[in-house]
Image 1: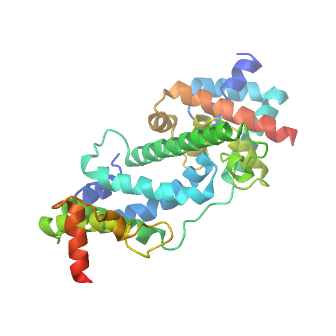
Image 2 (image 1 turned 60 degrees about the vertical axis):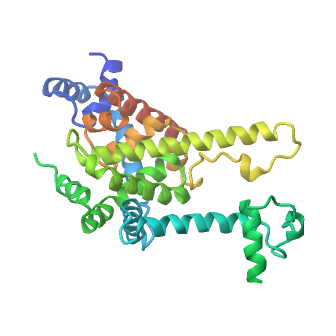
Image 3 (image 1 turned 180 degrees about the vertical axis):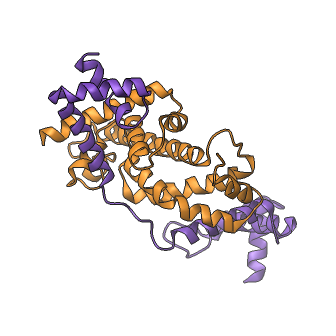
Length: 137
Length: 180
């Protein structure tokens, strides 16, 4: 093997991924070839620099956050502790609240007043909601 | 040889939260470092690490011991890192397209998000320039001391490709560091 073929094997040589015969061949070559030896030192230096990079530590509560998230996720998927009807009702309520909060008077500069929705068709969801809202007020 | 993490994964699959906590504590540092260096962004790395660990939690009941647990875990981490890199590239391309006609583009949005998190560190800067597969192969070999077979399973390439990736990565780094 010439120098070019030898250097191409350096990664595997350093990482002990070569068979014994090839490894021995490279070892012998290195004893008589300062250029290849220099090349190999360059590789070792790269490894040392990468290995010596400062380690990054996770934030202190990382493990507990991940475990809590996993427990929450498994509770949600199994529906543990909360009956289906309650979860469905809660989800419907949340969606309704989100939609109708857009029309709440005085909630912000971009909301619209209730008067604009006076012409809702009878028995529509909006009509029922506004009627209930009026009664509540 | 028996994989020491197999019992943990079995227990997690049965819903054992303490086993999951042990796994999180064992892998949080290696995963965080691997992801941070692969995507070149420390700030996002913790979120991605959490996502990887939650994926492991969800997938544990379906884990088949064809590979080592650590190989499987790093495979998930590598895929998540690639997804994040792809997302960033898309976002960057979109902003470049949007800002092409503008005289002044918002610098913080056009800044290369793939740049390493600490520009001053030469080695990080040079590492950040490597293609993702070379970088991942190098980090898995040097920091995790994984065999070529394990790295090949994680990156879904052949063992010969791993040898080639590592050779090219080390050659590039050696050349770049010599220049500095």
